[in-house]
Image (tube, rainbow, N blue to C red; front, side):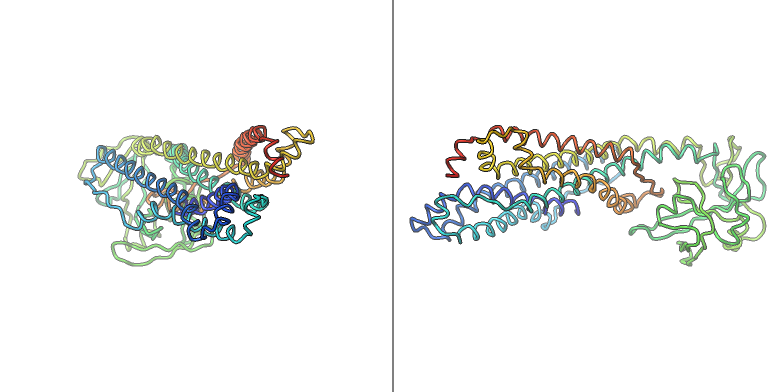
Amino acid sequence: MITGIGLLVLISMVFFLRIQFSLDKQDPSIGALMAMGVKKRDIFPVLLLPFALVAFAGGLAGFILSRIFTLEEVAASEGYYSIPSIPMITHPLIFLYCVLMPPLVCTAINLLLIRKKLSRPVVSLLRGSNESKGGTAGIAAAMLAGSLLAATIFMVGRGVGLYCTTVKERLPEEIRYGNVYELSEEQTEVPPGAQSAYRYVFSLEDHDYIRDIQFVGIESGPPYFDLSVDELNGGVAISSAVASRYGLKTGDTLSVFDSLTGEDYEFQVRAETDYNVLLTVFMKIGDLRSLLHKEGIAYNMIYSDTALDYSKDQLFSAATKENLIAPVEALEPVVASSRDIFCALAILFYAVVMIYLIQFAVVRRRKDIACLSAFGYGNGKLIWFVIGRLFALICVSAAVSLFLGYQISLYFMPSMIASTPIGLMIDYHLPEYLLHLAGAFGIIMVSVFLGMKRVESTDTLFYLRSRE
């Protein structure tokens, strides 16, 4: 929804630039109508209707396509997952936003421009001498907004893909045991070669979700967790996943509650362990037992490299390392397609914005190009004359927007992955940044090349006569 609002603002700016250019070309026609006594109120519909109809048709087509794609997605999901048939219901406000917002915005912008134009003297309109010299600020604003929006969409897509890829890479490294058993009844004996622990699940609020977070009570020096709990002094050690997901560090307080009893708990964070994937909090096993009013020695979780001989009645659940990794591997193709769609849309959107605005900058300076061309300036110098300052702005905006887009994606990612109990592992390194920046420069150079083609197609004699 935020991206949609950003697109609306950007498209409004493109509307403004395009309508301004189109109306400038119609100056003589408007002046002739006014000279013949046609009232301003009669001219307004003639100028407003074409733009409004095009915007309405585009909005309606987009709304219909969105319904088709959504129906197809729901139908595909029903074939794979156990979900009920859900009727597609469109809220009236969504219909109004998609179908009526574009023509309304287009008409409002058009009205502002037409009122200003019709306030000019009729002779000035007839001569068509008022070539638009403004619009540079509008082009620059559209460049900046388009770059930032495209970078944000791209970084969100990259973040979604990187999130899944990182989990797939790190999860096998962090699961150091071959089997894990959750016992239905607490036991005091541990099988030879196994490691015992006590596990309890607390909850906390996380972006409108009630998130379960596992507390694992362990003894010092276990083979499967690289952590010493002797110096926690009643506090807890959080995994890197918890630290990155909730912005916690050593010395902070972790607040949770027991969803069964409703009792609230607060724990002092005394250490952080390099356990990046799962949301896990470690405690000294005796402290966790005392907190839960468990007396004596008891275990409800067993880790082992080899399969253990437990009956079904003795277990709540059991899993191998392969069982725990398999869901991530199955999810990767779906996540990859989402990443590719996000990134492709961002690249396409950025290319269209750059090409369109550079073309527009060339078109609105055609008379100046004709004069300079008459004095023998080549196409390379002409294109640099038209977009020299704009080119510098484009390059700077691309460099800054990539970094800002990454920061904005970090803000949105916790909401996008709120339903997954995994840490936030999204980083951005200099080599990848330079690669993305080179790709943006490639799109910019293609846009400049197409702008040069527009310079070459300028009818010099026509514009020189017009300027006279």
